[in-house]
Picture 1 (cartoon, rainbow, N blue to C red):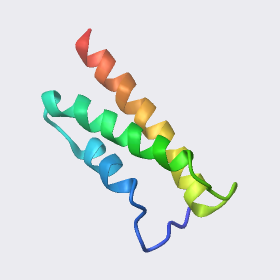
Picture 2 (spheres, rainbow, N blue to C red):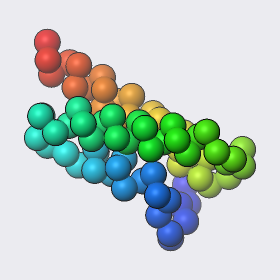
Picture 3 (cartoon, helix red, strand yellow):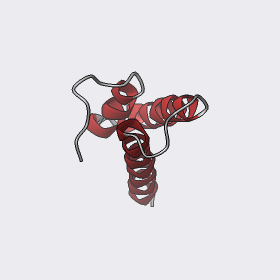
Length: 74
């Protein structure tokens, strides 16, 4: 997938969540990423656009982070 050269505002908190290794900070980073993606989804995003696809990928990535974090607590 071709992402635009310019990063979207919501991508910084998402990237921070992906790269976080501190378990205490991870939860906060995941919530920040989820919030940023959801705030963007509440505005007008062209269906099928590069950003729409990137947001969908981010939604999926956040779910993976949540699943991995939940498994690590068991």
